[in-house]
Image (cartoon, rainbow, N blue to C red; front, side):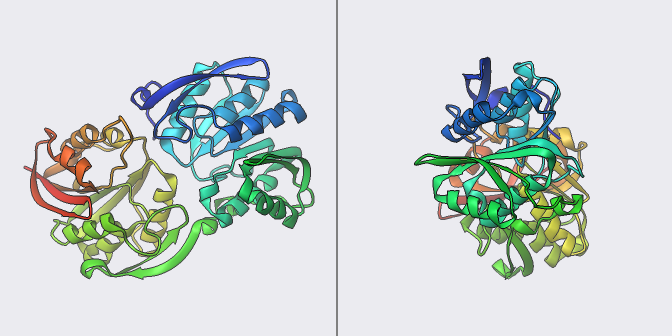
Length: 404
């Protein structure tokens, strides 16, 4: 679930013009998303290579992975007016920006999807697959990106990616490992652009594209504050081998929470807190829902809770706390757990205050955790909740508030 276009205005940092292959475009950028002040150099280099060596007008289908605000996908669509262009990103806010940017530029036949890379595509094939590869994703994930891109190409298709220079040799070697055919290579001191065909690499099945294993880092047992549970953890999410201060504090106050009935978790991370609560008080929990901006958080929480025999009853990809009350009926929950992620100049406190007041049943509780400053600001909101517990440690605070 993503807000309708126009609902992202409060997240906009600036709007920048961008000229691609003779077409004037503009893009709204956000502090919450990659490259918040200008079009990044890596995307510019990739687009320059596409304009020089690819006949974009012959493209009938294109896929942009990790689309961000939609720069690469929109530029491709601007040159291939008859093409079906699909953009994917794991961040719901990025997808909302990409959708609005394409609409503002008058680009039809473009769809933006909130999902992990290549998931939900079934057996679709594409003439062009592009990506500004995220260096922080980790080599197992990047390796799967490169292979999946080859596996979903049409017979004449090309994958075109840009990656930071320190990972250039890794990317070239990965393409060689699955016998991809490099058709264009361009390197600077900061980036490398690689265009390649599938070569002798085989087509992938829809099931292979759904595989979550490249994201998995480890499986471990955790025992914070008397809770005990096992968890699989992912690359590029925090708390993968031990809990940080915020996580520890969450469990410290969770010991005294009224864990009963219907539970909603906003930004579950690896799934630590819902897994710990299920392991300790699972019989008292009648249903569990999860929501986040980040599809990987949702996927990892779903994986871990399903392994405990309690898969979430609902999963929502949402842009912000303000969208929670749009996703669920009034009075839906007895306990809400929230780990808001601060965005410069866009306070989350009013949205969570409204959502908690709307979604908590009478007597329901909210467990909220974050930096001491951010939680202090929330507790000063007019939310109609009574503070029951508040604890601070190492610059973080966790609190439980009850609806009367």
